[in-house]
Image 1 (tube, rainbow, N blue to C red):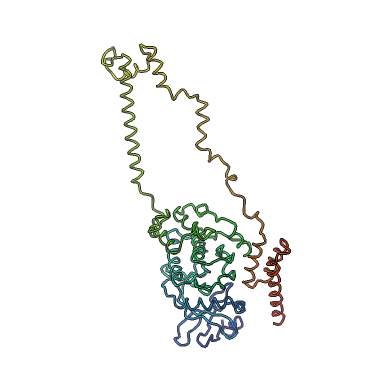
Image 2: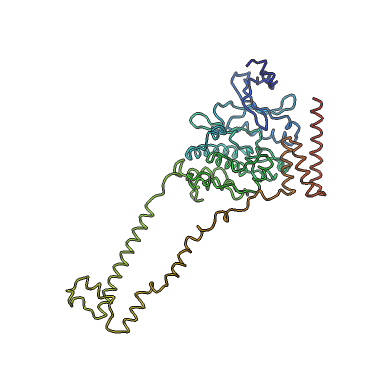
Amino acid sequence: MSNESRTKIDPLIGQVVQGRYRILRTIGADSMGTVYVAEQLSTGQRVAVKMLSGQYARDEEFIGRFRQAAQQAVALSHDRVVTTYECGQVEDGKLFIAMEYVTGKPLKEVILEGPLPVDRAVALGIQVAEALQAAHKAGIIHRDVKPENIIVRAGDEIKLMGFGLAYPRNADARMAQTGVVVGTSEYLAPEQIEGGELTERTDLYAWGIVFYEMLTGKVPFSAPTPAATVAKHLQEPPQPVRQLRPDVPATSERVVMQALEKKPQTRQRNMGEVIAQLRGEAGQATGGGLSGTRIASQPPKAEGPSNTWLLRGAALFGIVVVSAVVVWFVALRKGDNLSKGGSGGKEEGAAVVVPEAPKSPEKSVKSQEKVPALESVPPQEKELATPKVPAPVSVPPQEKQPTPPEEKKPGVADHLRIGSFYMDRGQYEEAVAQFEAAKALAPNDQAVLTSLARAQKALEAESRIRRAR
């Protein structure tokens, strides 16, 4: 394809950004913007430049947070993290990020080939956790952890990128309370959707979804629309991993299911704890450790069960011996001298003598009370008692399953959150629809009316811009 035809497709191709980066070609795009391969004019080396969508250039809150995060992202240096060279703003107001150009395959493409072997998923999951741990130590919350932002290089070495949405941990209170939802709907933590405080555990939730996806080949929450997906994050529990893939070790399932807890405080404390669980180190205390990347698939040690069966065998042998002594002693008390009689002292004669009627009627009654105690239970009572053990199995599967969460209709708060989500993504028509749905439920709610008016103004402004073009 000639440069002229590519320029028609994207006017940025061939242009120089900030006098330093010549745009060569497009290599990817998402809801946040477009990624290009560029040449750094001063060195001649290849770099990656991401141009964010124009809607973010109009958001002063986002610009302030972006600049603050950029300073920390440039200072972040780790083997598992794509190096950020520069973040800035071009002449038309668009924000851009210049970063290390990495060759490889996005993790999303790897997952599309099918669920990963457990050992490989664990190995990659540890690397992603290490990259996030480094970012968190540098005071950065990523906020957009997803397979598209993870590059798998030769030798299964990963690089984490996508720090354009990074959220400084020390951001001022005004920024932290804006409640702006930024990210990808399939990987948003509940507190991220609700405009709550963002912490290391916010990234941990998204990491859990990526790990879940590597093991099962699918995300735990998906729906035809982003709004419906967001609602599932808030309302539905994820389907257990082993229901989708029974060969996954229970230890791996416990790690990912804890990471996907709705409440941040019930997840792991940080990425270090996740790494420890996966490696089987300090995480042993939580009962879900994996040693390296293979211990989860190893069979349990046999020492415990072997000792148990030895003890049981010894106890059973002792019972048999004691029972034989008791029988022999009872026979002597009945006056049947085993050393005398026609049997010649043979054991067969002793076995016959025990159940015969003794000389004393009183002794006969006592022996009957002791010996056949278990046989006195009527057969029908035994049959009634037997089904008590497998009773849980007889419960029909449909009775155990909870009521599908889809039946729960979104409330006013849900419509407000989803509408805000659309507002942030510049999808004003969808935002208006959500706020109108909220108004139908609460016609006099001031927050609803304010949000609806704001969305309608944004939609009108967008329409004017389109008409002007």
